[in-house]
Image (cartoon, rainbow, N blue to C red; front, side):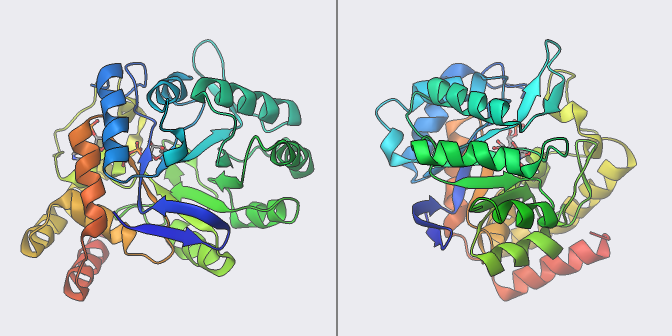
Length: 327
Ligand SMILES: NC(=O)c1ccc[n+]([C@@H]2O[C@H](COP(=O)([O-])OP(=O)(O)OC[C@H]3O[C@@H](n4cnc5c(N)ncnc54)[C@H](OP(=O)(O)O)[C@@H]3O)[C@@H](O)[C@H]2O)c1
């Protein structure tokens, strides 16, 4: 495993492969996740040297945090624990954004209780809430920082303009955004319009400010492992069935790009998974790649990619295939 520090998080030792905990637990909404295997996956991650764990109240509608809290008993001090706030949901699991003072405080209190810890190393604002003034959210964040319930603040899915505006009110240490080989400057995620372009805007922005950049969905929800084909389909209970990019003509275009990338991985003697993750790890702006996994073998495989070095030739060949496919 490799580790990085960034000026905005000077005391953190962050593994370049992080553990994205959305799919933890049987109620996560990801096919095949079980509680028992998820706990074993957390243990395996720690054994492999993974220190960065990313979760959120909304993942599994409290399920991810609850399971993680159980699994981390006696191990909390070995990891850097990040959660989020600002996404609420109704009885039908329809989400809405709320970064009001009251909602931020309530979210963090709930997270601390489920995660069985007295502090979060990083609290991230999950999605921008344009109905709540940034000043109000910042007041809640200052309160939590002063109480020691959070050690640092980050944003996810924010525009650069809003991140800069927030940073004038409270220090912003990290940016989490959608970024992988096939979605470098994409404009949507699960039908939600994105207010940023990851490679064009966020990469230079984080480098310039010394902030951590945390790419999410690094394997395009599994597509970049090379396991899927044009006929792959997801059951209605799998969250991926709600990703329009994994169906129809757009999907076939992505699959064609993956087919173009496979010979490059083969020539380098590595798997598609390792090539996709190493491509991110090698980017100097990237601090920790947030890989989803629900089995111990998956997180171990992902962790091993931190030690893979892609040659200039491999990087050049990848670039050519992406350009040829209009990506
Ligand atoms: N800030 C945000 O708005 C946001 C949004 C999305 C995600 N995230 C974060 O990013 C994390 C990861 O993103 P993601 O969950 O969307 O997807 P991802 O990491 O791109 O893909 C995860 C899926 O890839 C497959 N996989 C993982 N490792 C594998 C391996 N070594 N070999 C074969 N298959 C492997 C598994 O698929 P199978 O289930 O088919 O085995 C797994 O469920 C989340 O857990 C979360 O922490 C944040």
